[in-house]
Structures are given as C-alpha cells and as structure tokens.
Image (tube, rainbow, N blue to C red; front, side, top):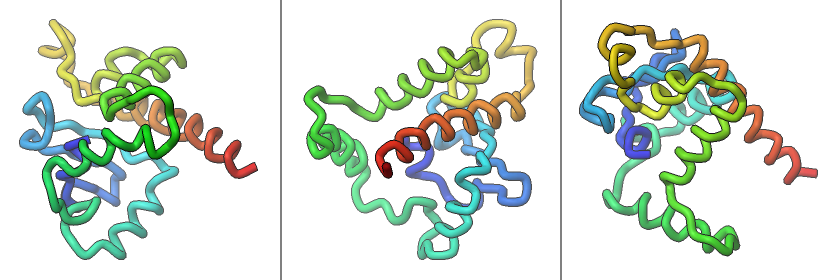
Length: 150
C-alpha cells in the first residue's frame, strides 16, 4: 500500500500503460514494473485531471493515517473479524494462484524478489502475464460490484 500512497504521476506512463515503482518506494529496494489494466486507465486519466498534487492519491497528511484508517475499516463495514491491508495482498495472491496464475507472476505483482536462479538470471518482466492476471482480478472484483448493484 505504501507504494501507491507514495506514488507520483511521473511514475505512471500513460503512453505505454506502465507503472514503475522506484526502488526508493519498494519493499525489496528494487524498481517494480507493473502494467496498468485497461479497466482503470480512464479512471487514472480522470484522477490526474482533477488532482492538485503530484501524489497520485493526494497529499499525505499523516504517515500513519492509511494504516490507522484501514485498521478500523473492517468495523465500519460491519465485519465481525478484523483484517488489515496485508490480508488484501494475501487474498490477491491466493485468488490468483487458485485461478492458475504462475507463482513468479504473482511474486512480481506483489513486489517480491524472485528466489534462486530465477531471480539472478531471468530478467523477464512477464508483462503480458501480469496484464492478464490483473485484468482477470479486476473482472473478478467487478462481479461483486455488479452483485451489489442488483
């Protein structure tokens, strides 16, 4: 979550539809390259048009505000069990694995360093696979939104 919270518009390539997280903002200390799924492209363009700061999600008022707010969100939503932001990452990883997404694609999307020889010699970014995985994930999430709207 910190990657998106610290993200600035210069990290977002609207020509090639790529988000490049600089190493300074990544957990693993390395640059992370992620595709921007089609379903959120127009939303990002619209957000940039009305945003009055270089930070994609607006001004940071308090470094702990996201964790604090998200830490209380489960109660506001009426959930009986607590959950945190990291649970969202786990849900994404588990769901993608259950749907057949290769583990190395999931690891890259999560910003993890690939282990062993794969991490040393294999420099592929798997952009097509990451794009497909993210678009499938968004389609899955949209089924819940559509169900709520009925």
